[in-house]
Image (cartoon, rainbow, N blue to C red; front, side, top):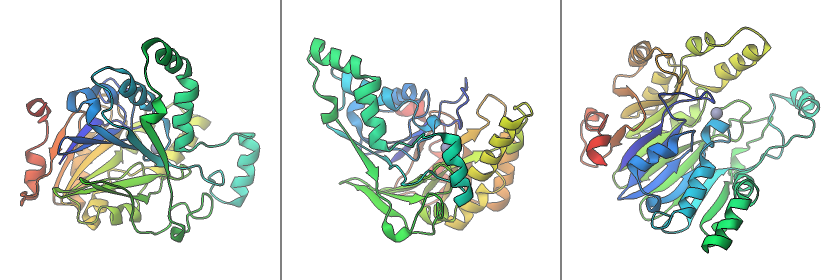
Length: 349
Ligand SMILES: [Zn+2]
């Protein structure tokens, strides 16, 4: 079982040093992909083949987590000898029944502000990509190159949140709940839980359990008690992190900056808090990704690490793109999980 950081940058800012958030988890040669950030598909090529890909999981619908989705779907369908070897399954948020809002007053204000705009589900997004965005390309290739119907290769599913959670887009976006299984096969069981990404609802964290060990992926979230539960005694917790002062210093003053400051402060996890999440969950190792700011040298990684280590005394690293972290059942020392893995990509592909 291995974790491959295909993209470690957070946010919709194009970085020359980090692709957008995307992670591959590989088990016995089969690949499970979590999010499809900008530029990550080029790194996928270094770690796995299209024929290895079995399932894709989207934590939420922010653009920086789905920019490359169309590339993954159409490329996997198109390249002779390199295409999907079997239909792939894709799981992500459904469309909430209400526009997410802080409360009823906010909901009414948004109805006026958004002027009829609506949200989409994961199946809506995939249908739009295949039937609208790439409709001409797909029809022409089907006619010209005898390609087969892409919907037969790509099966999209909206993740159903258990009713018992009592989740609601306005009144209860981060209910206390238990992880629930969204996918299982002979290699893995993948569970989800709602995390707290403010108005981006639903937003999920995922946990992957195999016979080799376990990995939790926080998704985008503020400090989340659900995420702590999701990562209970996990071998490796891959958690998002932001350096709020550093990212704010890059924005000019004004209303747009004020809005994004609230978003960043209330939707993401500061490096001051993420060590506590890892400690309380009992995670055996912590890898930080979704680094904000994502541009070269903009986040103070040294300060980040020392802050995390005040709360968490197991292994912690800040991921770079193309790191590989191996998880083996024989690992007895936590340090082995990380020490065998960081920067090992060149030796493994
Ligand atoms: Zn997000």
